[in-house]
Image 1 (cartoon, rainbow, N blue to C red):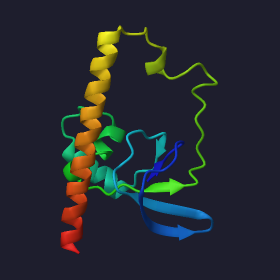
Image 2: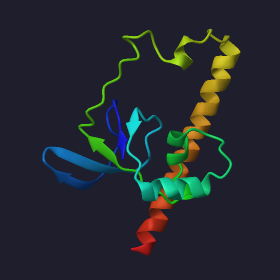
Image 3: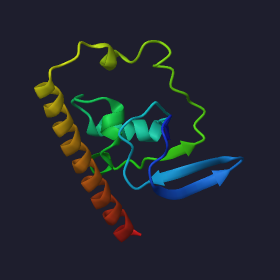
Image 4: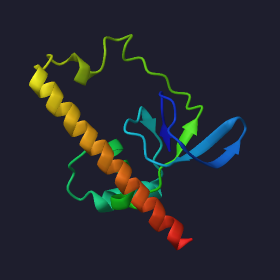
Length: 130
């Protein structure tokens, strides 16, 4: 279960109760402020990440690879204090030049497009199994 500080992406209601909702996003969010990972999910994630090559939130963006469903809780109860403390580690680094920033944004666009495509593909496969 992802706990976001940003607005939630589009998705379907998975569960609701006591003023809380669990949303099954159409496309997993590309940033996670906090998360709850159960033992079963952790076991599945460890099985597909024998070689550790990315942070867990990036791995969770790939349900077609992990087979792990992503849910988002709202309200999350989490707030972002990075601005209060001077920004995140990534934001504190020296500013790259224009060419480096453009290349980074292009790569980010391609990555997000691929995540969206794979998420839709995984959702179609899951719908076919039901």
